[in-house]
Amino acid sequence: MPSIRHKSEVASPERPTVTSPDDNYLDAAREAILAVGWSRTTLTDIARRAGVSRMTLYRRWPDTQTLLADLMTREWGDVVREATDSGEEATAAQRITGGAVATVRALRGNALLRRIIDVDPEMLLPYLLDRRGRSQDSLAGVLAALVAAGQRDGSVRTGDPDVIARSLVLACHGFALSAHTMTDGPAPARDADVTAYDAELALLVERFLAP
Amino acid sequence: MPSIRHKSEVASPERPTVTSPDDNYLDAAREAILAVGWSRTTLTDIARRAGVSRMTLYRRWPDTQTLLADLMTREWGDVVREATDSGEEATAAQRITGGAVATVRALRGNALLRRIIDVDPEMLLPYLLDRRGRSQDSLAGVLAALVAAGQRDGSVRTGDPDVIARSLVLACHGFALSAHTMTDGPAPARDADVTAYDAELALLVERFLAP
Image (tube, rainbow over all chains, first blue to last red; front, side, top):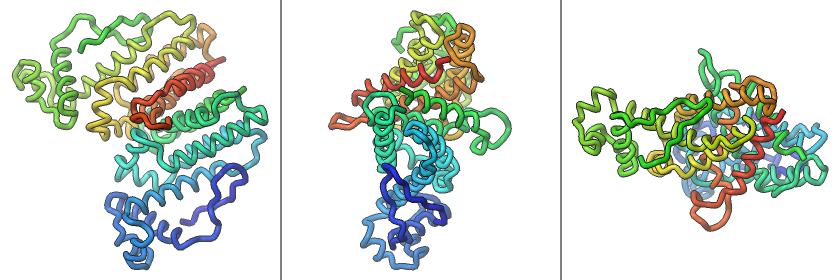
């Protein structure tokens, strides 16, 4: 996965900068999903793409779903880290606002998420209807730490940091998955210009956090 | 469908207070979905429950999907109308805020939506990923009219009323479908107490609209 990875300074879970064997296997799984879709991806296919035996993968992951869950966790973690990594904002509130909009925009353009939406959209349902996934949970945790930091630097209102952070995640769901459905006109819906909604999201987050 | 229906005064599409034959058929379809789920509901089953012939329904709707789409439009329209109908709020902004929270709460408790989520959750995906449904479109239209009214009465900031209204719908998606996933604790997730998130949503909408 030739993506740029920065180390985050504050409150983000560390991602090792040295590539581990796991990363190579997850790269192979990512390739497989992009090629054939989630539900048709098998351990055998991933092993072939990684140039190892099926047994090598099997020793690490009991089944394809567990491996793909690890891939998702890595992928969305990378998206959030890259989107929130500029570090140029003056206050925690500004960092959350910029990071929320950048994350939503990055998710919308993410090749893996697009492929899942095109081929296996029902894979999203558990994370909308049943439970937080590991990535949603981790994102909410990072946000809660930033909210607490903002309460200390005076840029964020009082309130339970977890509830404020999780509310932000809830508010962002629609902007990440559905903003294009709120556009009109002849362009292919998913590639529609949603700049206006990004601007509204920035205002929404900024005002939601303000003291 | 033994729900209470009020006539809305402002900006809501009218719903006839006299029950039409269509309403009886839609009631029968609603019963069928609650009994066997969306994907197993057939025109024959609906006709039987309504006490009419399959041909009677067929003359009105070409297929089950079209009939069920009309049922959804009626159901969500009723939910929104009932939730936004108090008319006691002083300003348009207050009406939007109260209506948004009440609508989200009513959708969460709606028997038909719960049944769809339990049995046929994939029915939701087109309305999240592909296009606005008629009800989302109608709701966005009602909200846009209220936003414009709020811009006239000075309770809502400037901006394109359609973009502001549709942004509110996007922000509400997560609160309606996923708030329970943001709770912790041992209770069955969907019946978890999400009062804290309703309060956050109210604050979010109020601040998002403020001049």
